[in-house]
Image (tube, rainbow over all chains, first blue to last red; front, side, top):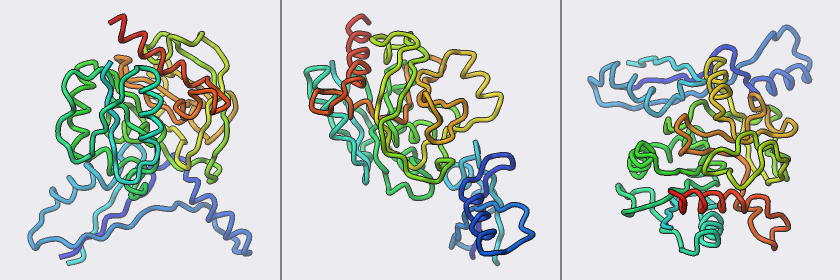
Length: 77
Length: 223
């Protein structure tokens, strides 16, 4: 089974990479973009039956720095 | 005085730190590989060096902070043993939970490599006693992720406790309150982005960093 972990900066934390992407989009002439936040996508290939709690543990212990980042787990079946 | 310097894959300032410590203490530090689970006995100081451990993958310092040796470092820190983290070492110490906050990508997105003017905010630590309070010093920086951030409550707490030890004289990387280095509440763990070991002898053209190591030697001799 696979799971995806999406790691994003918490709201309110300055996202320099998102800002740079935003500027670049504006430079290319794309209007109407109000804000850009960049994050990380981590794909996990897991043993069948790995439970949510175990994945959440991985996120809290290593994959996300919960001082500045939020994470979201998506199971891909 | 017995010191140890941790060695992580990818770190490039471990030997620089060892040289600075050897000059200050007269003894060669023990180099401790990240897979070790114990530190040498009767240590006076643990040094966590700068320089892109694990290639900075995932987050700067994240992998190193979870390496086996860091459990022993956390235990030593809890006993009050001095722990000094420089640059990537600062990132490792925050990731390990030994210091509050986190270090993010520089706000201006550029890698900053130059001398930085600092103010010694607190000279009442074993790392800074050889400086004068409010003294202006110059120490080189070289980092991409030196932007110190913490929530408002944490910032108020570290400021109120006098945990901020060094502040940039002008904005370098977007750090909250221009924080360049801070200690834990107990004062035995220091993390700083600038590199004192690169300003520690005449050949460096700047010896402002040397007094940090001399402060430690003085504090430990007095202890």
